[in-house]
Each structure stands twice: as structure tokens, then as C-alpha cells.
Length: 340
Image (cartoon, rainbow, N blue to C red; front, top):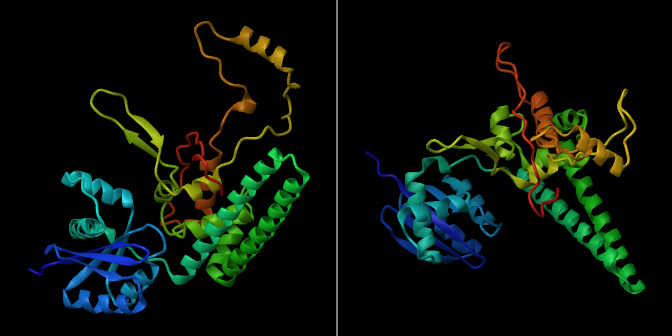
């Protein structure tokens, strides 16, 4: 029987703490190219076959690339899973050295941590998408400050900052579109997404850069990755409850659309003024019942519909009898402070 040796690495700005399991050995190296090259040789001599790191920040990106090129099975794990594993072991102390050993033990008992790493082009596209989201958030903050500015000089400063940030955001969006069009496969997927009502250049770019699994996984897996799949919670005699949780906030925020009251439909009456509408609502209220909110204030499942419309044309059919069905649409409220 072959003994599996796993390594866990706690990445930092200046140092990498490395732990080995099951031996429990730990050591530290500097975050430098020559030290990274020496680490690959040392891990190979120790018989390491699996290396796991926390997916947090970009400090470990050169190390991850070097390990993948050296032939190691590399996995990037959500830090929440590592924290849950520490709680399961009943440990409370936390240092960089202890974290490295914890990650190594986690890698030893969790073989599903090793997954295909994104390519260099995918990493570059994701970095551009992250920068575009940052610029969008800064533009929104500057617009808020502009509304509160009283001095003309301060207002001019905010206006100039908004113009500069908008120009930078447009440049990043143009670069994302150019890189997507260079790949024939991504260009075809982008055209399909843009042909769907409700999806524009920005949402299509977010879906293709932040979710490369789109078109390669089934609709249920995509909905779960986007955080739009209801997660059921049930215990004992309590009735089961389903709520949206997890997923990628950037994708969930991109496909979220706040309902807007459109033009009146044929047969609809002219909206009544607010006092008259309230009187009509009170008169139509059933005894002991709950009054539903007006239609223009109801939050519909636009995000789930948008994502399902994006999944359907990109997901290949396996057989004629296995047709894609609609997702179970539930209302969604975007995460606090998240912008796409």
C-alpha cells in the first residue's frame, strides 16, 4: 500500500509556512522565486503528491504556477472549509505554522480538494473582471460623495474623479471584450449570451470570466455555483426551509435585476394615486388575510430567470429525452455592498 503524503501551505506576503502530513513536519520559506524553486525539489524528495492552499489573495499565485508546472496535484480550498475542519478537530490556537499543519491534514483526508486550475488566460480575465468591479464600486462611492458636496471645488474634484474612473472602466471592459473575441469558443458563447434578452455586454463579460464552467456543467451545478440554488435545511419535526446561500457573489450580483415597472399592459387600468390605491387595497383586503404588496413593489425572480436563459443555450443536450427544465425560481436579494 502506497503511503500518501500531503502538503499544506499557508501563504503570506513575505513567507510561506509549509506543513507535511502525516509526519507533522513544518518549515518556513521566503516568498521569493529562488525559494519557491527549492521548495518544489524538497517536496518531491519528501514524496508529496498533493499540495493544498487556501484560496485567499494573490500572494501564492507564483507558487501555485510553479507547483503545477512541477507536476504536483494542487488544490485551492475555500478558507471556510479549513476553519470548519479546525473546529471539527476541537482546536482553538491559530498561528501560521499551525495553519500549515492543519491544511496538510485536511489535504490528507479530503481528496476532493484537487481540481483543475484555471489557465493563465482565465486568471488574466478574472483579474480584469475584478478590476472592473472595483472601478464600478469606486464610481458609485464618488457619485454618493458628489451629492453631499457643497463647495464648488470639491464638486469639481468628484466630477473629475468620476470621469477618470469611468474612462478606466470602459478601457477595462474593452480589453475584456477583445480577449474574449480572440478565442473562437468564448466568442461564440459571448454572441449567444448577448442574444438573450436582459443580458448585455457587462453581464455577459461577468458570466464568461467569473464562471468558466458555464456550458460545461449541468444547470443544477451552475445554479449552485452562482448561489441561486435553494439549500434545504430540515431537522427533526421542523418543516424544511430552503434559502439561497453560498455561490459566487460577483455572478449573483451580475444576474440580479431590480424589478422596474414597465409600460402598462393591454387591459391594465391607469395606476391610482397613492391615497386612492390605499383605500382600494383596504377595501379588497380579505378578513384575517395578508395584503400582498403592489405589483410594482414585488421582487420577482429575475436573477434566476436570467441565469437559466444563459445556461440553456450553452449546455449541450446529452439525449433528446433529457430536456432542460426550468429552475425552481425563488426571490433573491443581492448581497450587501456587492456590485457587478
